[in-house]
Structures are given as structure tokens and as C-alpha cells.
Image (cartoon, rainbow, N blue to C red; front, side, top):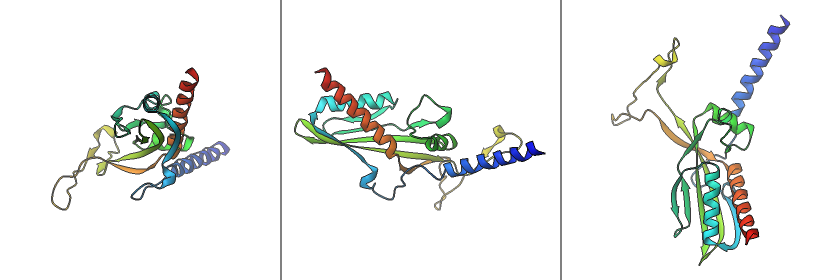
Length: 196
């Protein structure tokens, strides 16, 4: 009897922890991001090619696939990268156990955008913004006998057009990962300066 009550308490505690993990996490976004949600790194007039290379190498270190690399306009963006949190320990975008749980329980992707402030042939600063995009699958009918027998209901919009079976929504900005990415770029720049 005592073992059963301990088991019930453990199940209740796990349910509470998993429920709270979905509510915590990212900075929610309404319209434009707040200035505090974008991480800025002062470059003190660093060379354009060195800064750009350091940013690209830092993104590739985290296994992001580069989407747009535009040195003339001073922009680097990545393709959305999905991780499964605790189930993928080799991916290191998560900055805490709360994000590990959230990425495990929800299909989420991160998109990184780096904007460079350029003064002639030097960069004065860069801003890093990391969006977290969650995938939603409305109309999924889960079969109780077997999950493989589950099906999707097709939903029509107001005009009678079929809606997509899944869609992504930006749920917030990951400032903790943006800060770690800025630290990685800064470390690469200082090590390149020390080598010269």
C-alpha cells in the first residue's frame, strides 16, 4: 500500500513538472521584438571578413544550415533547425532543462538572424535574434487502439479552401541561446586576434 502511494505521488509530481515546462521558456512576441529580446555584440571596428567568418563558423558549430549569407547587406539567416530536446543530446541549442523538456514535448524549430552594423569596411556591432517556431497539427484524430491507425480531419476555411494539415507559429524569441551564440562569436574573434 505504501509503495502504491509513493508511485501516485511520483506520477503527480512528474505531471506537474511536465505541465509547467510547457508554460515557461521563451519571450513571447507581439509585433516587433523588444530591444531586450535582441542580443547586441559590440565589435569595436572589427574587420568585415573576420566577423562574418566567425559568425558563420559559430552557426555551423551548432549545426545550423545557412539560408542567406549576404555580406553586402550585412545579414546571415539560417534554415529552421529542429531538435527533440532531451532525446537529442548532441544538439545544444537549449540553454536549460526547461527548454530541453519543451523541445521534447513540442515540435519546435529555431531560426537565427544576424544583422551587422557596417561602417565602411568595418563592423561596429551585430544583433542576434533567435525565433522559436512551434508546429501545430489541427484536426489530428488519435486512434485509441493503435496510433498508426490515427487520421487527420481536413478542415476548410471560410472560403471553402482546405487548410494545411500543419503550420508553424513563432511562439517567442530565445534570448539565452542568442547570448551564447554572441559569446561564441566573440571568443572566435578574440582567438583570431591573438593568432595575429
